[in-house]
Length: 86
Image (cartoon, rainbow, N blue to C red; front, side):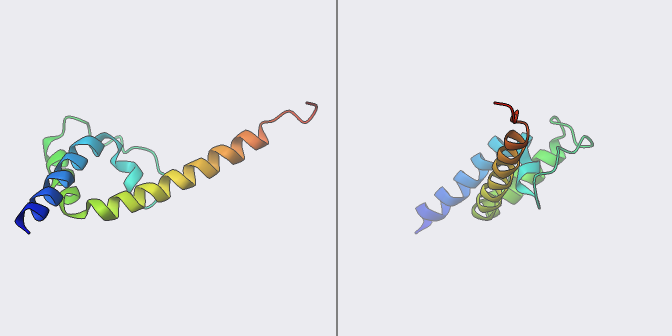
């Protein structure tokens, strides 16, 4: 059982490290990146990794929702930009 817990926490840690620069996609919708927190901010990185270590399944689900919303926006934008004469 301890191996499963360690694997869960290790995956969450790697997930946090990998998604730190895209953390705005895991919030309450597809907003732009916050210009206030820089990539080199060690406190923000440590908080994101700590949070995602424990909550990575929830973050994956919210990231999938954001990807779905962005795909719908892109489809709507490409549909509206089609030339009606073609």
